[in-house]
Amino acid sequence: MLHSLPREDNYMHRGMRKQLVQILRDKSIKDENVLAAIERVPRHFFLDPAFERQSYEDRAFPITAGQTISQPYTVAFQTQLLEIKKFDKVLEIGTGSAYQAIVLAELGITLYTIERQRALYDHVGQFQLIKKYPNIKRFYGDGFEGLPSFAPFDKIIITCGAPFVPPKLVAQLKSGGIMIAPVGEDGLQKMLRITKDKEGKIKEEEMGNFMFVPMLKGKNHTK
Ligand code: SAH
Image 1 (cartoon, rainbow, N blue to C red):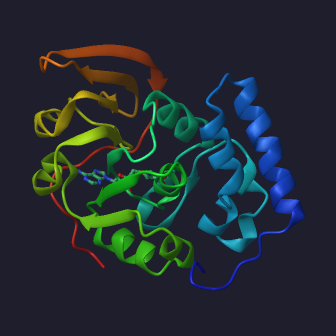
Image 2: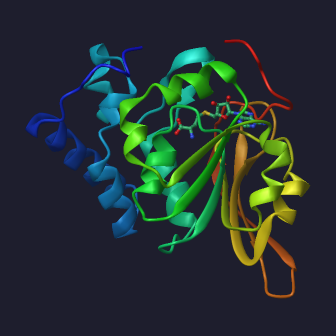
Protein backbone atom coordinates (compact mmCIF):
# COMPACT_ATOMS: atom_id res chain seq x y z
CA MET A 1 0.00 0.00 0.00
CA LEU A 2 1.08 3.55 -0.65
CA HIS A 3 0.13 5.27 2.55
CA SER A 4 3.35 7.20 2.85
CA LEU A 5 2.99 8.92 -0.53
CA PRO A 6 1.36 12.35 -0.63
CA ARG A 7 -2.30 12.06 -1.62
CA GLU A 8 -4.71 14.64 -2.88
CA ASP A 9 -8.08 15.44 -1.35
CA ASN A 10 -9.92 17.44 -4.00
CA TYR A 11 -13.47 18.60 -4.81
CA MET A 12 -14.30 15.21 -6.33
CA HIS A 13 -13.41 13.34 -3.12
CA ARG A 14 -15.30 15.88 -1.04
CA GLY A 15 -18.31 15.42 -3.30
CA MET A 16 -18.17 11.64 -2.87
CA ARG A 17 -17.97 12.10 0.91
CA LYS A 18 -21.07 14.31 0.90
CA GLN A 19 -22.90 11.53 -0.94
CA LEU A 20 -21.65 8.96 1.55
CA VAL A 21 -22.91 11.12 4.43
CA GLN A 22 -26.32 11.30 2.72
CA ILE A 23 -26.38 7.48 2.49
CA LEU A 24 -25.61 7.29 6.22
CA ARG A 25 -28.40 9.78 6.99
CA ASP A 26 -30.80 7.66 4.91
CA LYS A 27 -29.73 4.64 6.99
CA SER A 28 -30.76 6.72 10.04
CA ILE A 29 -27.45 7.92 11.46
CA LYS A 30 -28.47 11.11 13.26
CA ASP A 31 -25.50 12.34 15.26
CA GLU A 32 -24.42 15.48 13.39
CA ASN A 33 -20.95 15.49 14.95
CA VAL A 34 -20.35 11.93 13.74
CA LEU A 35 -21.61 12.76 10.23
CA ALA A 36 -19.42 15.88 10.11
CA ALA A 37 -16.37 13.85 11.17
CA ILE A 38 -17.01 11.31 8.39
CA GLU A 39 -17.38 14.17 5.95
CA ARG A 40 -13.94 15.47 6.98
CA VAL A 41 -11.89 12.26 6.94
CA PRO A 42 -10.40 11.37 3.52
CA ARG A 43 -11.26 7.66 3.52
CA HIS A 44 -9.53 7.19 0.12
CA PHE A 45 -6.18 7.79 1.87
CA PHE A 46 -6.70 4.45 3.64
CA LEU A 47 -6.98 2.42 0.45
CA ASP A 48 -4.76 1.87 -2.55
CA PRO A 49 -5.13 4.75 -5.09
CA ALA A 50 -6.69 2.24 -7.52
CA PHE A 51 -9.75 2.06 -5.24
CA GLU A 52 -10.62 5.75 -4.83
CA ARG A 53 -14.24 5.36 -5.87
CA GLN A 54 -14.82 2.25 -3.79
CA SER A 55 -13.52 4.08 -0.73
CA TYR A 56 -16.72 6.16 -0.68
CA GLU A 57 -19.09 3.26 -1.15
CA ASP A 58 -20.75 2.13 2.04
CA ARG A 59 -18.89 -1.13 2.41
CA ALA A 60 -15.97 -2.76 4.17
CA PHE A 61 -12.76 -3.23 2.22
CA PRO A 62 -9.75 -5.54 2.54
CA ILE A 63 -6.58 -3.85 3.82
CA THR A 64 -3.22 -5.37 4.63
CA ALA A 65 -2.62 -8.60 6.66
CA GLY A 66 -6.00 -10.14 5.80
CA GLN A 67 -7.91 -7.48 7.74
CA THR A 68 -10.61 -5.01 6.75
CA ILE A 69 -11.41 -1.33 7.04
CA SER A 70 -14.88 -1.29 8.60
CA GLN A 71 -17.93 -0.26 6.59
CA PRO A 72 -18.68 3.48 7.02
CA TYR A 73 -22.17 2.66 8.31
CA THR A 74 -20.70 0.41 11.00
CA VAL A 75 -18.17 3.09 11.99
CA ALA A 76 -20.94 5.71 12.17
CA PHE A 77 -23.30 3.39 14.07
CA GLN A 78 -20.74 2.37 16.70
CA THR A 79 -19.47 5.93 17.09
CA GLN A 80 -23.01 7.27 17.51
CA LEU A 81 -23.73 4.67 20.20
CA LEU A 82 -20.69 5.84 22.18
CA GLU A 83 -22.38 9.25 22.82
CA ILE A 84 -19.00 10.96 22.62
CA LYS A 85 -18.40 14.10 24.63
CA LYS A 86 -15.42 16.38 24.06
CA PHE A 87 -12.41 15.33 26.19
CA ASP A 88 -13.70 11.77 26.70
CA LYS A 89 -10.95 9.22 27.23
CA VAL A 90 -11.73 6.38 24.81
CA LEU A 91 -10.22 2.90 24.34
CA GLU A 92 -10.48 1.18 20.95
CA ILE A 93 -9.71 -2.51 20.40
CA GLY A 94 -8.55 -3.25 16.83
CA THR A 95 -6.76 -0.24 15.27
CA GLY A 96 -6.70 -1.93 11.85
CA SER A 97 -6.44 0.79 9.19
CA ALA A 98 -7.01 3.51 11.85
CA TYR A 99 -10.07 4.84 10.00
CA GLN A 100 -12.36 4.42 13.01
CA ALA A 101 -9.58 5.83 15.21
CA ILE A 102 -9.31 9.00 13.12
CA VAL A 103 -13.09 9.49 12.99
CA LEU A 104 -13.09 9.30 16.81
CA ALA A 105 -10.07 11.60 17.09
CA GLU A 106 -11.94 14.18 14.98
CA LEU A 107 -14.49 14.40 17.81
CA GLY A 108 -11.98 16.00 20.18
CA ILE A 109 -11.29 13.06 22.46
CA THR A 110 -8.15 11.26 23.56
CA LEU A 111 -8.03 7.83 21.97
CA TYR A 112 -6.04 4.83 23.16
CA THR A 113 -6.07 2.16 20.47
CA ILE A 114 -4.68 -1.40 20.52
CA GLU A 115 -3.73 -3.62 17.57
CA ARG A 116 -2.57 -7.24 17.95
CA GLN A 117 -0.95 -7.61 14.50
CA ARG A 118 2.57 -6.25 14.36
CA ALA A 119 2.38 -5.77 10.55
CA LEU A 120 -0.71 -3.56 10.86
CA TYR A 121 0.63 -1.67 13.85
CA ASP A 122 3.83 -0.85 11.91
CA HIS A 123 1.91 -0.05 8.75
CA VAL A 124 -0.24 2.60 10.47
CA GLY A 125 2.96 4.12 11.89
CA GLN A 126 3.99 4.97 8.30
CA PHE A 127 0.66 6.63 7.52
CA GLN A 128 1.08 10.41 7.08
CA LEU A 129 -2.48 11.24 8.10
CA ILE A 130 -2.18 9.71 11.58
CA LYS A 131 0.69 12.09 12.37
CA LYS A 132 -1.86 14.93 12.40
CA TYR A 133 -3.55 13.40 15.45
CA PRO A 134 -1.46 13.70 18.61
CA ASN A 135 -4.65 12.73 20.49
CA ILE A 136 -4.31 9.12 19.18
CA LYS A 137 -2.08 6.89 21.32
CA ARG A 138 -1.31 3.59 19.58
CA PHE A 139 -0.38 0.34 21.32
CA TYR A 140 0.75 -3.05 20.04
CA GLY A 141 -0.89 -5.60 22.31
CA ASP A 142 -3.79 -7.89 23.11
CA GLY A 143 -7.10 -6.07 23.40
CA PHE A 144 -8.46 -8.72 25.81
CA GLU A 145 -6.06 -7.20 28.37
CA GLY A 146 -7.03 -3.57 27.70
CA LEU A 147 -4.66 -0.93 29.08
CA PRO A 148 -4.83 -1.20 32.88
CA SER A 149 -2.24 1.54 33.41
CA PHE A 150 -4.38 4.10 31.53
CA ALA A 151 -7.77 2.96 32.90
CA PRO A 152 -10.49 3.86 33.64
CA PHE A 153 -12.00 4.92 30.29
CA ASP A 154 -15.18 6.92 29.66
CA LYS A 155 -15.92 4.85 26.57
CA ILE A 156 -14.66 1.57 25.07
CA ILE A 157 -15.22 0.41 21.48
CA ILE A 158 -14.37 -3.05 20.15
CA THR A 159 -14.01 -3.21 16.35
CA CYS A 160 -13.54 -6.98 15.98
CA GLY A 161 -15.98 -9.79 16.75
CA ALA A 162 -15.49 -10.76 20.40
CA PRO A 163 -16.38 -14.32 21.49
CA PHE A 164 -17.65 -12.89 24.81
CA VAL A 165 -17.61 -9.54 26.59
CA PRO A 166 -13.99 -9.27 27.80
CA PRO A 167 -14.19 -8.97 31.60
CA LYS A 168 -10.97 -6.98 31.91
CA LEU A 169 -12.42 -4.33 29.60
CA VAL A 170 -15.61 -4.09 31.68
CA ALA A 171 -13.37 -3.57 34.71
CA GLN A 172 -11.56 -0.72 32.90
CA LEU A 173 -14.82 1.13 32.11
CA LYS A 174 -15.65 4.16 34.31
CA SER A 175 -18.91 4.16 36.21
CA GLY A 176 -21.30 6.04 33.96
CA GLY A 177 -19.29 4.74 30.98
CA ILE A 178 -20.40 3.08 27.73
CA MET A 179 -18.82 0.12 25.93
CA ILE A 180 -19.86 -0.87 22.39
CA ALA A 181 -18.92 -4.43 21.48
CA PRO A 182 -19.88 -6.81 18.65
CA VAL A 183 -20.18 -10.17 20.42
CA GLY A 184 -20.65 -13.63 18.92
CA GLU A 185 -18.80 -16.37 17.03
CA ASP A 186 -18.74 -17.49 13.39
CA GLY A 187 -18.72 -14.17 11.55
CA LEU A 188 -22.04 -12.99 12.98
CA GLN A 189 -22.13 -10.74 16.02
CA LYS A 190 -24.73 -8.90 18.02
CA MET A 191 -23.80 -5.29 18.69
CA LEU A 192 -24.01 -4.82 22.44
CA ARG A 193 -24.22 -1.56 24.32
CA ILE A 194 -22.87 -2.17 27.80
CA THR A 195 -23.38 0.55 30.36
CA LYS A 196 -22.01 0.77 33.88
CA ASP A 197 -24.11 2.84 36.27
CA LYS A 198 -22.89 4.94 39.20
CA GLU A 199 -23.09 1.91 41.52
CA GLY A 200 -21.03 -0.16 39.08
CA LYS A 201 -24.03 -2.22 37.92
CA ILE A 202 -23.78 -3.49 34.31
CA LYS A 203 -26.59 -3.35 31.75
CA GLU A 204 -26.44 -4.98 28.29
CA GLU A 205 -28.65 -4.05 25.33
CA GLU A 206 -28.66 -5.60 21.84
CA MET A 207 -28.43 -3.16 18.94
CA GLY A 208 -28.64 -5.44 15.86
CA ASN A 209 -26.53 -7.92 13.90
CA PHE A 210 -23.15 -7.18 12.32
CA MET A 211 -20.20 -9.05 10.81
CA PHE A 212 -16.62 -8.44 11.94
CA VAL A 213 -13.27 -10.20 11.63
CA PRO A 214 -12.67 -12.19 14.83
CA MET A 215 -11.12 -10.82 18.01
CA LEU A 216 -8.18 -13.17 18.59
CA LYS A 217 -6.19 -13.82 21.75
CA GLY A 218 -2.53 -12.84 22.11
CA LYS A 219 -0.27 -10.89 19.78
CA ASN A 220 0.79 -11.77 16.22
CA HIS A 221 4.46 -10.85 15.75
CA THR A 222 4.64 -11.45 11.97
CA LYS A 223 6.15 -8.38 10.31
N1 SAH B 1 -11.13 -0.19 13.53
C1 SAH B 1 -10.61 -0.79 12.32
C2 SAH B 1 -11.26 -2.15 12.06
C3 SAH B 1 -10.25 -3.15 11.62
S1 SAH B 1 -10.72 -4.83 11.58
C4 SAH B 1 -10.75 0.14 11.13
O1 SAH B 1 -11.42 1.17 11.23
O2 SAH B 1 -10.16 -0.14 10.10
C5 SAH B 1 -10.42 -5.37 13.26
C6 SAH B 1 -9.00 -5.28 13.78
O3 SAH B 1 -8.99 -5.88 15.08
C7 SAH B 1 -7.95 -6.06 12.98
O4 SAH B 1 -6.93 -5.19 12.61
C8 SAH B 1 -7.47 -7.15 13.93
O5 SAH B 1 -6.10 -7.47 13.77
C9 SAH B 1 -7.73 -6.49 15.28
N2 SAH B 1 -7.81 -7.43 16.42
C10 SAH B 1 -8.35 -8.67 16.49
N3 SAH B 1 -8.21 -9.19 17.73
C11 SAH B 1 -7.58 -8.25 18.49
C12 SAH B 1 -7.13 -8.19 19.84
N4 SAH B 1 -7.29 -9.22 20.70
N5 SAH B 1 -6.51 -7.07 20.26
C13 SAH B 1 -6.31 -6.00 19.41
N6 SAH B 1 -6.69 -6.01 18.12
C14 SAH B 1 -7.32 -7.12 17.66
